[in-house]
Length: 459
Ligand SMILES: [Cu+2]
Image (cartoon, rainbow, N blue to C red; front, side):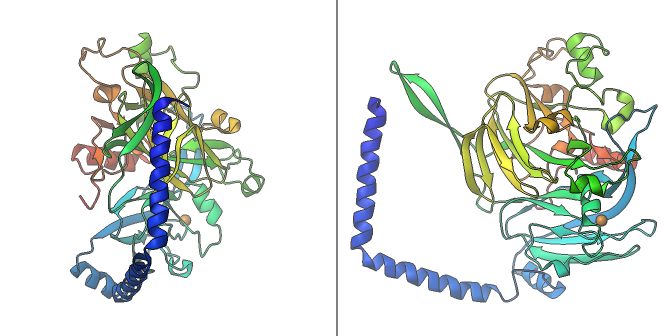
């Protein structure tokens, strides 16, 4: 046992003993604990008028709003559209029968503060082919209240986001029937509920030399972080791009996706040109979305700076386990619903419909793949690349030698960036990228230009 460590253990033992001693002698403190819990019960009873759990009526929303609660709208439109899959090109379109919220997969991310009222409205246009519904996992409402919204109708419900965390929302089909088809065809999205008392400082332990001895040293990072959202999932399609339920029952997916696209965050021909000096010489093994003709589908990379606090909102939207791993990195902290699950872990298992917040510091410039560490998933598209620092040394080449990162030079993809919370670091640049219909891509482009895309409603 090393000197400093032994000394710290002795201090910890003395501290533990004194806590035990004071607890056993101090009965008055136990009484005051009971008193606190009674007061809290009374408070909860008062608090429940009007209701703060479950579905809120319009009157209750109005009363709560007058008392200071914020109401955040989440406006969704259910539409069935054709969207591209792996193998698609401008010359040879290859698409599947997608079901979407707002013409994009995943649907638009909602970001609220813990304690905000979410007012969800789902509309189904008159030319849509199917009714839809919405289940928001951040609510605590009976499923009977999610409703089935018929073609040409709109439906609203409201609730208070009581718990912090990363939550799935998804279509519940038509009164639960056909739910699997709707969800696995694209009707899913993410709701981020920021903790009311904020994200915590990140503490990272490193073994360093101190006075000639290797010792554990703690480094602290402010809660402010550069943020990304990653939804992992699968497609179960037959050769005609139709949903294949028999394949789903057997867990035989036809593709793995990140934010709806297989291998959507890999280099493209612009990167080829910048790094290799030749648009046709690929940097990475698989670059299926190479061409600029693919517009919003052209693959992009995610850029971060070396030593920067990065916060990832990761949701498993699919039907298979997500063994979340960043090749060459260790996940410094994994938080579920505002409780730390792991510190310094290589791979974190995220079950179906489960979300986590992951903090990472990338210590060295390089290329890092965020994968589902299931070998079938890696080969079928469940991989996304981060580039840390100016790993390829292109800053000089593009005449920006002072650029801190690629993000300053090239920007980050719009579908991988959540709306900003009050502890977000702004991305230096944002590009249109995502499994968007052309109309939706145009809207996203306009929202980037007018600055409204990443503004969380509570800001
Ligand atoms: Cu639906």
